[in-house]
Image (cartoon, rainbow, N blue to C red; front, side, top):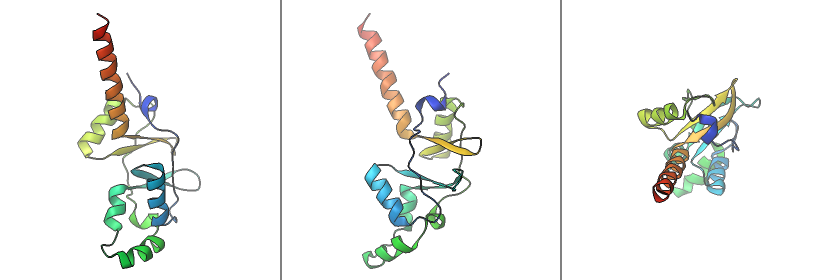
Length: 141
């Protein structure tokens, strides 16, 4: 069995509930990520802001965009009650949860602390690795 902790991302970029939409945008843009966990000062998961959440909160008018981005906090746009998974869980269960719920990531929580995140991109990387292993084993016979 492949467990979640074997393929999750553990070097996380997080923000707090009082950070602005500017901080979310800059973090997503600079780190090329699509999901930002929002954590308490103690490291507990409060919610998550996805790229889609950021776009939904972005006004159409560029005149008000700067004002909204500066004056809106992550707590106002984050999703709460986020589905999570433990690091020891079966990675297949994580993949099935992502697919069934039509979501792009699952925060990985252990002892009420955010320890990682597993995304659809992690599963794509795993699939590529498995296909390469299969192709290599076929070439050696």
